[in-house]
Length: 463
Image (cartoon, rainbow, N blue to C red; front, side, top):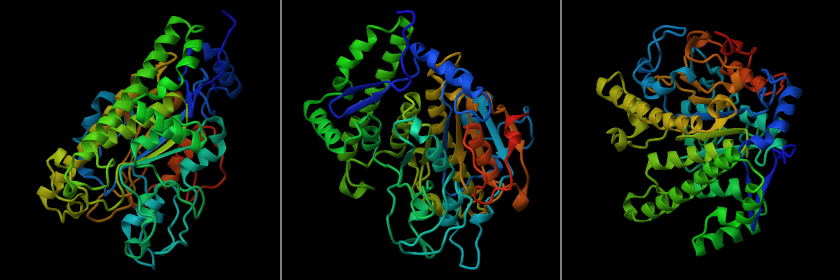
């Protein structure tokens, strides 16, 4: 019994179901070996203890009220501005990066389209080809470079999520295909990774068997008989629990509770959405969630995916660029895009700030969730780098420089958090792809060239 250990790739299986496990003490011998082999340092796929490093990007559309986002001083003693105060509980785990630029999101001879260009360039650092048709062209995104090199280590190479149903064709911004605004993840120059907007289908991606027909059969049976996905792996789980120690059984119970709670929340959200009057629906049921509820469900899907090492890289679009969603939850009933063109009107700027604070408050709850999961001597958040921001700073001027960039987590101990890093200023600031390259290198991902990068932003690793 004392020599028994569990493979990190162990799955609980049942009809149409395959459930990865969280990091358990019984896995530590193998994980420590992996950590020793990789050196457990910057540039390794795992930490010194063998825990996987994770990387995620949360995209926020339409810019920020930068005056209430950007700290006025650099270093560790900076004062949290109004918007960032929403994540004050995680101050020591945050790195604020100012002065990065996306030159490839700027307008060229083929016209404006600031929103389409922004989301297109965010993770690629490439200039989008102007087209309203299917002949789109961009570049491989940072997350997909990770997926290409590390995707074989996990059940899902990557996980793409969104709260905005993506358009598959047509034009959304001055002659540019809608594809650019509804996708930030690109597998190739011509292949976007369409994000999942339905929390239930995102959940099924995590816990399906990999056989679409069998997974659909299992889902239908669960819905008909009011069963949980856990009911399908119960026998496998019982056999495993008999061999685990008390601490590992506690971790497993905590994980199972998270899965069960997410199932319930999705079911409750669907029931609420179906009761909405037809004229109040943004999507057809069951996608008509309250925005805060929808975002929370997607954040929980990402948290479970990272907890179970189902994937090590994810993207999440809170909304598409140019989104005109109102936010009554933040006491803003005007369209987001409309008021982002504030024309220096104080009332509109204040509304933008309320939306920014609301979004960051939802993000802070996600960080709470990651921090609640223990991994060795630290937490799941410690082994993550969660990038929050966008490719527009001021929505009124459509600025693509001095971008809002916030990193949460310590990337396995590599990031020097608890400070404000000023990397540059104005249009001459370093390319955002230098920042992406540094994060990818820490994940153990090697690339010679990436978009418009001119190097790596290694300042994020040292104070």
